[in-house]
Length: 160
Image 1 (cartoon, one colour):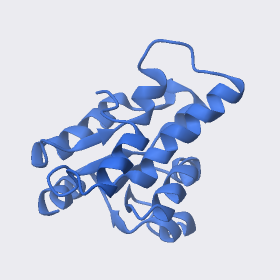
Image 2: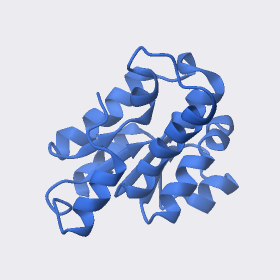
Image 3: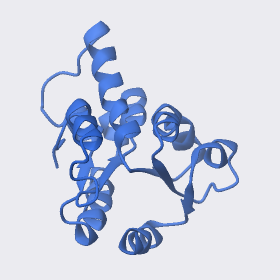
């Protein structure tokens, strides 16, 4: 899975009345968790399953996976100002996407996701939290939709 478009191009097309009606956009949360805990902490299979659930029901959807963009190239993760700029560019995709999807299996992952879900919420995205932590303050503060599991998410995507 690769990053399909950059934020500036996406915003330009949205403002021009581009393919927003024909092509949905999704952002998969996980960049902050990966940066803080390392790429081994991320479940690549789960991320592929989330993207697969989206593409099954919306084959033309743009699925932004910042984790893949950050770690998937095999290049070292940028450090210093370049790394910070790239982090902000990638999390900016959350604000420009229609739907921000956050898999949050525990309170630690909820805390790790705050930067991305806050940016998405402020940008007007629908924030979908897939979690058993529905009572968590941060989930309630930023999630538009709370779902208990991947099956529920798949049904939600199908209906959307």
